[in-house]
Image 1 (cartoon, rainbow, N blue to C red):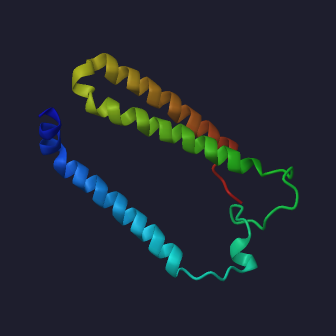
Image 2: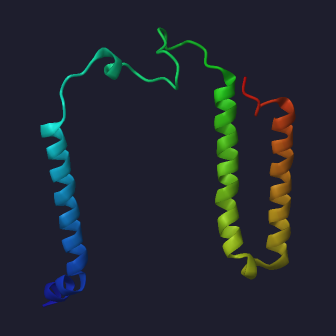
Length: 123
C-alpha cells in the first residue's frame, strides 16, 4: 500500500525521469550513427587557448593568464558573497551592512592596486 501511494505522488517525476533518460540515450545513439566519420589532422589537433600547440609541456606560460584567472576568481567570489548579503540585508541590520561595505572597500583597494600594476592591460 505504501509503494502505491509513493507511485501516485511521484508518478509525474518518475515519468519525466524515464522520458529524459530515454531521449538522452536516443539522441546520443542517433548522433553516433549518423555523424560523419572523416577526421582530419586539424580536427584532431589539441587546442591551447588560441595558440599553436606547444612542443614541450614545460614551456613557460605568460603570467598574464594567471593574473586574469586570479582576478576572475576574486570578482566571482565577490558576486557570490553579494547575492546572499543582498537577500538577507533586512535581517542582518546595520552591522551586516557595514561589514559588507568594509569587504567591498578592501576589494576595491585590491582592484585599484591591480589596475595600477597593469594587470588589466593586455598587449
